Image (cartoon, rainbow, N blue to C red):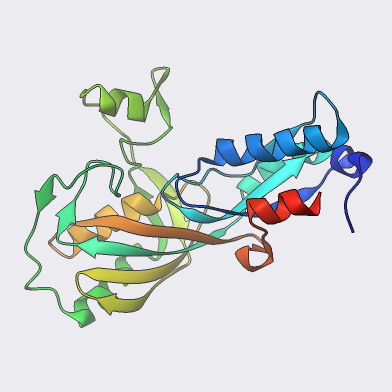
Length: 229
């Protein structure tokens, strides 16, 4: 059943499976444009409940109309991700956005060590966000400071990780599943995990699979949503 304009104005929660290399903002813009075009209107409120990096895929919760007021509630919910950490090297962005800047030995790392080390990250922990992030410091985005080659002091913040498990080891790649609180940076987790193994680590794959009770399995692709209009 296709939705009417009033449905979108009164509020809809749209679950979208974000493709690789799209920004969350681009997805919102695309959906907004197609809703406006379909109903020949000038304005409609559309927003997302939690950014996904361009190099990540998976669940975006998108709210329309009056439901945009619920965005903050959804943003605060617990999230689940799956992904891959590559051991033995770091990048300034902690993922593939930037080139490898340092390599480290990995010969000492055993599968048992990898599984054992996850325990250090379960519960409430202090985490330092990546310098390549959209957080603000003195009115500037951190990634703007990083790209300008400047250094900045980043404070740690408390986050909670109820679950962190290794699902596959194909050395030097380690696949994982993690359940975490709002404000958790999986890129920082990858970096810190490599460090805890007396080596290095960076994120090579990331997929958001859940936000609260919403699952990516219920999500549509952008194309499927457009076709359903």
